[in-house]
Length: 474
Image 1 (cartoon, rainbow, N blue to C red):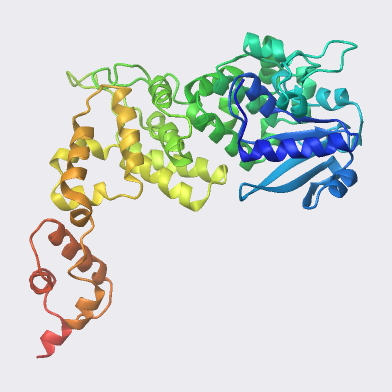
Image 2 (tube, rainbow, N blue to C red):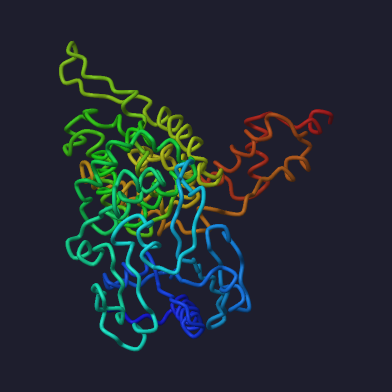
């Protein structure tokens, strides 16, 4: 078992210990128990207790009521100078879920069994007594009639961990009716942990996939992002497809299936297979923007597929304009899922520029330098590397970009501008529509090494755009 000595663990242990001292049951609950049993380091710890919210709030100096109706209180501690907020929830059983997300009513309980049976999956339904765990007691599992143990497993979670299975607690359809997002969560856990989804659980997802639209766009977005960034992205999207959820939440990605590509450039197969291979390159912890850029980079291909012209010998499949169409489709997806403007800008930039690497060795210096200084260019590089390694494996443009980045350096890529609006106004030019064109022309000339002083820049602009009003008046 991993040694747990991070601030979040220390805070949660102190809370459980205090509740024990007051005569209440207190366990670590949910994903942290699963991760401990898998030998992983949990990032946060939730506490489940028989103490009611008012007792929890009275027991600690700093608390925040984030869901008193549902028995949830945040207990605030400072450990090693770090503010730690630990979620402490009272054992409860839930009433009906009429909105497919939250129970209409809850009933507090002193019986941990009631609390466990309302949870989503068996691997998330185990409880751990942190006080016994801290004192080195073995990670034994409770049996009927035995209460002195470290792990309380009332739903077979330990066995499912060993068998590497994601299984709903109780009746799967009931669990998914309670919270539709659990269908996507099942996919995420199976992908991240490389587990199999139990047969009845998968069948329930397939039967209810169409009801995922009851979940808000923001919650769907966040769950899909976790599938992409927590590890196992390719498996996650294969499971989304198998479960029937992919066509519901991302029909544009489902349309990639069966879209053939020219074998001389894409020996790996159709656009769907190519995209899955890209997702294989996504590392755990990848940024949201890189992950979605990889997923959506070829989303314009189905709409632009053009088969070979049989009257033209040697003609091939083409996707003319797929970048521009892909940007438009991706913008629709990102707006539907309510991404932030900043995330949208970067994801769309990744799609817009991903084909430019093919021309990188032929770019003039000004174009090359503008390309290499795109915001978060490292993500453009990573996407391109995954793109070619999932197709023809031609790393020439990738290596050229790396060489140019090293050779040029910051000063050459982003030099102090010789000509700005201030210089143009001082030279007698009036601000107007041509100002932008003049400034771009001046910067291009500077990046190309054609001008080296403001005077040279102004001379070039007078020759190209004509003299200023002030010069004419003379």
